Amino acid sequence: MIAKKMIQFVEGNSVTRAMFEEGKRRAQIYGAQNVYDFSLGNPSVEPPKAVRESMIEILQEVSQNKVHGYMNNAGHEEVRETVAKSLNQKFETNFTEQNILMTVGAAGGLNVILKAILDPGDEVIAFAPYFGEYNNYVANFDGVMVAVSPHIPDFQPNLDEFEEKLTNKTKAVIINTPNNPTGVVYSEETIKSLAAILEKKQKEFGTAIYLIADEPYRELAYDGVEVPYLTKYYANTIVGYSYSKSLSLPGERIGYLVIPNEADDYENLWNAAVIANRILGFVNAPSLQQLAVAKCLEESTDVSVYDTNRKLLYHKLQDLGFECAKPEGAFYMWVKAMEPDDKAFADKAKDYNLLLVPGSAFMCPGYVRIAYCVDKGMLERSFAAFEKLARAYQK
Image 1 (cartoon, one colour):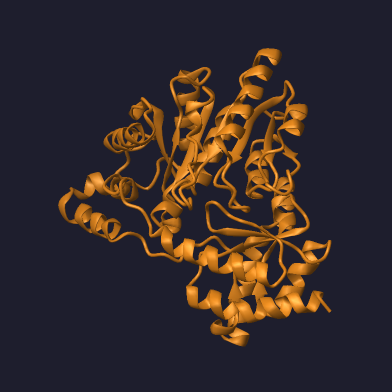
Image 2: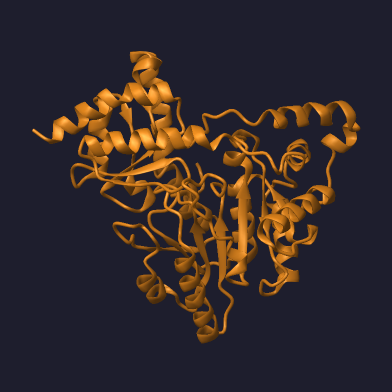
């Protein structure tokens, strides 16, 4: 019999993943060309050519022991140093290899830092809508997830409610910008206001509150929108990053944590995170991928492909009468359901082989998420199905 704690995870298995499996099932029945799967944020753009070339070069020229052997649990020192220098150049920071911990993607990094800081009963706050797996990551370490309700229609963080929900049990706040699922980029004004609230509450409670910035979509921003780098606004910021989107490497599971010297109890925090990386079973991030991405830090995926899809989809849905939040980043469209029950709306969409993720999966009922990181041809073919879906509610 499985563990009692796992029962709730099995029963609440990812809606997004279930939708992805549904897409494969429908493709077998109706043909892949006739199924429009917008469920999973799986990059459709190939990695930059330099990424493949760097892997081949490493395997050919570097000793096999160095490529495939164990290293410091924090990752290769030279890779961490290279990442630190790249960040310093981009954001005028002062990081060293002692601030960079290589991780098994952003998800691995979030679990590492939550393992390092959470005691049972500690609270973690996130702003709805947010990536539903945060709930599971916090529950992994017997923390308590506290959701701040969405600020509609701009989906910037609801800071009034946020301030009310901060307590002396709050250990961390997770912020995700550009945001999954809305595509909204939190403005510098928002970040400054949020940081001021956290500073005030830290003094009031006499505790450290860590701001965890989940940043896998940092490079996917459009129309010249700036994405603030949070360590510059709040000392107790920890950054989780992934190359899944910036280099189109989701299956390679490679990312890092930034733990600044300025963070409260830095030395213990750093050591705890490095140990957590080991005892959670990761041991270290994939060796080959560490070495490969270190050679490609100035490379990026072709964001213009996503931008083209963003514009096409946004204008088409608006023309059909859908209400959408215009995304400034990431590759998701956040769309208001045409009935109060977002799950029923997503089920109705399946009648037209449209696979959309209900907003309830992101703690924000009444909406659906459309992942437009898909082939442009598939996106254009789907427009007829979206039109039929709209007409079904406009009779």
